[in-house]
Amino acid sequence: MASPLDAAALEAALSDLSGWSYDGDARAIGRQFRFRDFSEAFAFMTRVALAAEKAGHHPDWSNGYNRVDISLSTHDAGGVTDRDIALARAIDALAG
Image 1 (cartoon, rainbow, N blue to C red):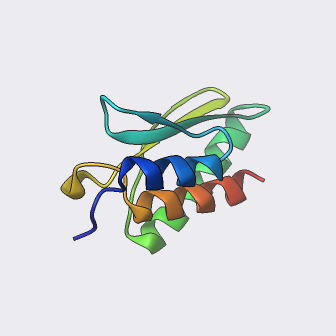
Image 2 (image 1 turned 90 degrees about the vertical axis):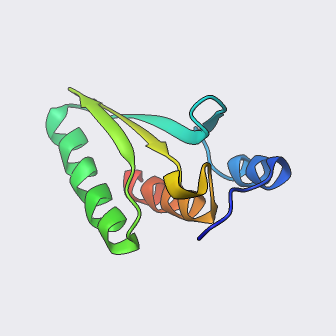
């Protein structure tokens, strides 16, 4: 099982992830993405779903019209791990 990142490692990882922030209550990192319309938002979610499935690591997320809110945490580890950081990077690449 993966171990949660310590505060220094988490801070270093977040410094390389534009727009992502840490939610201490949820023990997760999150970011909001905005798109031109619902179709673009849904297409992005589809690309993220395929990447997440390939990684075997799935986000908590919600969608409202042109907005996609994503939260990443490794639940069985009780916090943010390297798996979450890797998926956040993959998601950023998909967002362009």
